[in-house]
Image 1: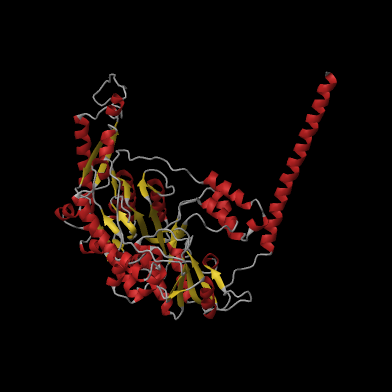
Image 2: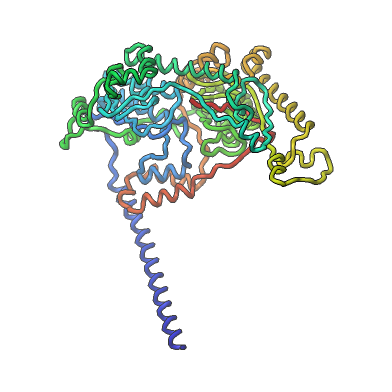
Length: 613
């Protein structure tokens, strides 16, 4: 038996020794392999160059955003380092504009091919900004080409700015107009015996209507129709102008599709062409031949091109990472829902934004600040914290300009009101000056299931907010009074900041939503214009003629800084040399990306506008 155990022990020991050797061998092989690949990448690195007679393939990945927030700076650097295509579903608006404007001045670029296959959602203001940039490009004498198998509504808006629009014979143009539809849960909550206590100020503050109604209220229907019609009119006007067709023809194309399709025997591509929405119905081979005619045909029969991701690395961007002179305009982007704490993907964290504002206030190089906002609001408390820091910035005699993006409503307007100037686009959604809070209780549901709660407390407030107990009349009155007090603070802030009579602001408030052009007439904003124009206005107020523009972003950890700086020095397609590269980066993404946190307003009071179209 001893011999048997010794033999088994020897086998196990030998097996363990072999495993240890193999582990050490492969780890060393992996380490030196990475070192050799990095050295090769550095030594053999070729600068990206734009060859003559090239077409810029402008590819838009996912949603068009003001600031990328799907991944951390660390993970973003890893993606760039491994040269992995940005399939994380976001493209910076400013990157698109920079590519288009640089290409218009680049003699090597003969035209732009709009690659809209991967494009996600975008705000009307963003589409208008890109369309305006494409118009500037065309004025340089170069062509813009759109060629897709099909177009959705956002894609087609950009395509309408092209000199020539191609459509696949099996394709279609899907235009539907704008709408806003929501599910309503009042009856469901009653059947589930859930008491949803809603407190709000403002007849048009409709964020919580789905919990207290089974249908849209007349007030919400009225205001929603107003801003939806304004946005749709802007869309149709632009497309009809770019395509030189009557707006009635566009509306007829949408509203009479069944009858129109009978005339084209069900051919959607033919229907689009007959209505002037596209220029040519063509296959990919025919499109390639056309693109070769305006560029250089390569030996393989393809056309010479450069991808926008590569082209972006060759041009000077509008915004610097660090100030390069003593005259600097700082741009801070606030995108998402406003909540207390640090910023995360989709969240404007008050701590993070306050830190950036303070950095700009204390920087001697920063002479003015532009706060770019794309937000429907959120926590009233967090909005006030940001506003307080903006007031401290103004005490430093540094001009503050607000540039509104797709939306800057409710809490986002709260923190904007004291700016020296507020800029918006015609299609910005703003206003929604109102406030609400909500609290569900489940006592009836629990009682129906045979579950009851009982106990004692030392004061009337003990256990008052226990979700298994009903809200007492005293607590309801307390919450409503507190809410009304914060609402009065809101309209007082707007009245003071905008220098409007309190009575006027009260009429404009009540949760009403306005388009940018309507807000201009009502003096809720000062100017209509893009972010670039807002920056120019900030420079003018600061008395600057020559200046840099710096995009302030949250500070990185030492590890993030290492990888960021490492990435700026070493570029190359490492992943092609490492078969495990993509898997490694995917693993890194999953372990580095922060998880969303459920952060609440300390008073559970929200100034939030929940709109989509």
